[in-house]
Image (cartoon, rainbow, N blue to C red; front, side):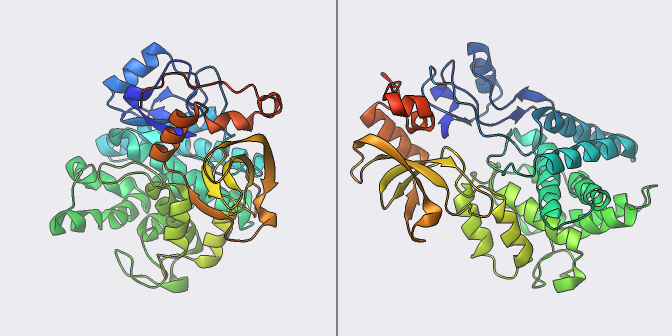
Length: 392
């Protein structure tokens, strides 16, 4: 997988991420070959960049499977968008719409529990809240399922994820999408959205309204008491809220925002596991990363064996994927690429992950995109599609 600027896209390249418009409707779903019309529309929508599976338009590699069905995800984003619009205009919303949505999400998560989290979607700034809410719901349901919660409890956790940010309706859009640093007053407004969400949700006419209100109120609290808005700590934070907090931060860090770039999953792993002491429930966080591909399929890395591309990620061994070594330490293609399970190697076997600039330079130098080595037939035949005259 490689991230390209919109002016670098070519017809035939396959999208590795989905894009939703400002109303939460899908514009482009992952796994779609680009056309001239799609590329024109992406530029018109000011989408700055997009992940594709390969630079070669002739090598139409499909992205790894999602943990939920694409139709389910699209419907969920649209439903959340409609719910937030109803809440903003009328002061109330149709809970049945979200309950059906949560049921579909939970069913997909339970049915596809062997699928790992690999890549998130791209969101235009205006639609970020809607698709972020769906991602948080999906990640929360996934973690809740790993924790062994019943289906009825998973539905509450999922609904909590879908609605955790509804309090942001009380925050001006200019503050939510501000590209620069927030002022003290603006940050004070942001820090009140959990309270605003609690007030909206506690009055819902459903048996579990109080639980949804707690999730909204506590999803920014930290185990060590350093969170907001009430500095709740330890076991005083509800287990569902601790789950939502992990999902919320992971999705935010791996997403592009007006004020930040998207971090790679391997960087987010380090940030959440090692650079945020006291923020999270560590038992749940470790369990979470057992089901999240820290090095997603298609990641190109430098290892002690040379340059390699991730072929497969195994549950419980996300720090040590199965890779195909395709080049030596100097970046020269080996005569016979070979696979190796890094779980059988030393812990320091991975030296670093290649960033997109380095990867593009490698492709320009060799004329071959490492993604082709994911195809077993091509690897055996050495019939690699070459990238000719690619403009960086």
